[in-house]
Length: 161
Length: 119
Figure 1: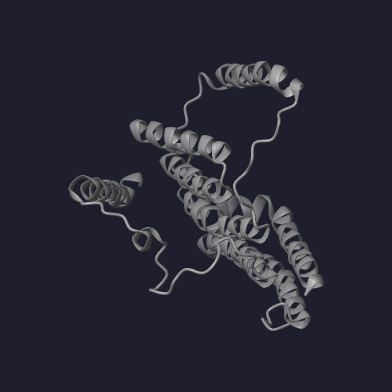
Figure 2: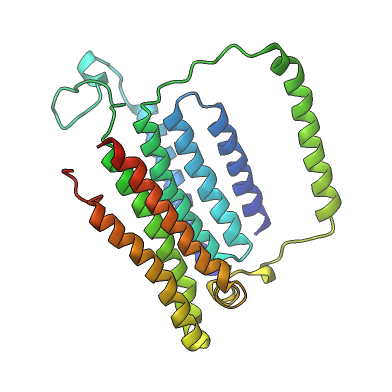
């Protein structure tokens, strides 16, 4: 179990780096699919089967379709590196180190004694119980959110035609 | 429980090994005599026309967006179906309102003609 976690965690990090470093937007999108799929495997290893499957269907499937469509719509080509400002050059790297140090410190301090076990399982049953009993109102509000998104999409896309 | 997914892992390993083996073998054994035609992208035998990064109609974007939204709706149906029996009528009414709100959105899309490709 643990070696699998390390393998797919490493794949996720490498692919995430590739998302940032690729200069062709479509390559970044493809790397993002790898990130999302390996995160799905990590969810699966934690016992969250339902989340893993939803991650693949909704994120790696549907959301990525949208990303690629937007890349095509904007007609994005290879990025040309812009001239970095002097402030970014001198402050960027130290700030990056500080940021990562802070994250590492916080993680180490809060989660050092904690171990994720498959007993923290989030199968469809426990998610359903929580969602439809304890969080019924947020669930209903989600439908309104989706409705607003539908209206927004139609209005934005239909205006030009 | 996790062990049920072992076939998927084996499948993934086979896929990676097979892909690497095929690519490795073809670059190791294969003979390379490139010509202009061989290097051109293959497009059903027709000579390739223009750039692949073409601007698409906004209709594709609209259909993609609407697909995602209703995809998310269906994603909520899975955990609901699992606990449906224990929730009894409460769960039924809950999901009825949820689907009802989205059905209003569906009618809106229909009336606006967002699904008509020609418009």
